[in-house]
Length: 638
Image 1 (cartoon, rainbow, N blue to C red):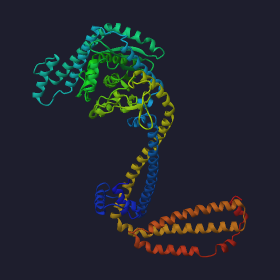
Image 2: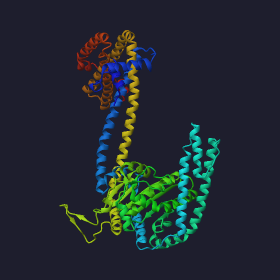
Image 3: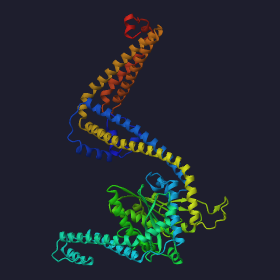
Image 4: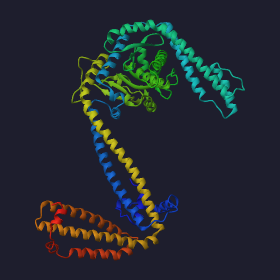
């Protein structure tokens, strides 16, 4: 909307006639604002003539016309956009996607938007395979040496994270605080004399971090050798089921006691790492799942530091963290070395039940870890029957890590009690519903089919396959609607930018105009009569030309001259009539000016007399005297 100064300047400008839409403002406040601008931005004013003032006035009118046109365009685009957004939301809801997923579907880069039925089936398969390996105990406990090395590596990584945070807090202003800081460095086995400088501290910390990094790399090499047997067994367990999927098992996750808990499968062609975790193993796991309070993961390594979890899940995360972080550091270092700077890694977390909850958190941690190492990460999470584990107060922080709700997909079946649990009220991502285990009739009563377990991994696997296959047909109109939304948003943004530019230019123009009126009123009064008289003379000349053109055209019609002659004369008459209308409108504006009303009175009378004279006389009588000579016809092209 036009700003306050623009409105008032248009009002005080004697050259502008405004509608009431621009007049609802306080006169005194606007006057003070205008005077301030006159004295500030446009002072001292360079004297201008009345003719130059009129040029400013016409420019202001033109800007207002353009602004009105742009406003109409913007309003039209907004109305269409509102309608298209409502249509888009309706189409998305028909796909069984929750409200949290509607906005996410608008982001063509979000995991939800780019997910295909084929990919969904792949993640479901990997999740089911991990579940089966865990349930059938296809893999024994991990090598004891491996589990110890994992914990040692994780502990060193935690020390690195703590020391990096400690280094960012070096006090440089107070000597007392700095001495205390130097003394506290002994926590990290770094001892410096009291006379140490800030530069000494930075060098010592850098050396310590380099030393820790070397220790971690050495332990990683040992771990790789110790865990090779476990990795070979895992590849053998998964090999038959991974045929044709182009994924290779790169790592095996286990709990601190060595029990299998998940696997990392990598697709080299797509640069996609899938982290899949198994669910609850025992009654104690379910006790932890159901009872808890706000807690943070112990082994965070500087990641997820602003996220609170249900304490039961936090304990599950801690139980799996050493294995996970040890693997991820090694994998990310290798990825960066192999693919170089600028390469993008896709990370997908997946799992059933508790495994889905763990995958969601660890995938987010992996994204942070990769970005901390300078790797660009596209994150996606697809869980099956997973419970909610977030504190609603930190959900916004979690979305900032994942990139939004659209990157976390919770696939839930109707009446699954696990996925219905909301411990801390905050749902993490978009929920995609698929009612395949239980049915609800139109009266709202329940019907129990043969399959009585809505939390079954088998049911989830088949539901995902069927559900996403059906969604593909529904995606076409959704994507078409999204394309229209993007086009309309582009038009709207362009219109808003034009409004801002026109408002700024118009405000400056009419403010300058109003300031000139205040400063040069006497000068303009002396010049206005001559200017208006000159403009009236222009009008009279055009009216005379129009009269002559009308006589010629009437004569050509009356004498039945060739059609070409009539057409040319008619077109010439139309052009002159249009010019007369423009000049008449301009004269009306000039004569309506309050500032120069005294000087316009006589000219107004003259114009009125001229109009009356023009209306008199016989056009047909004059037309009868016209003789179309051969030379005239030749000039007209006939």
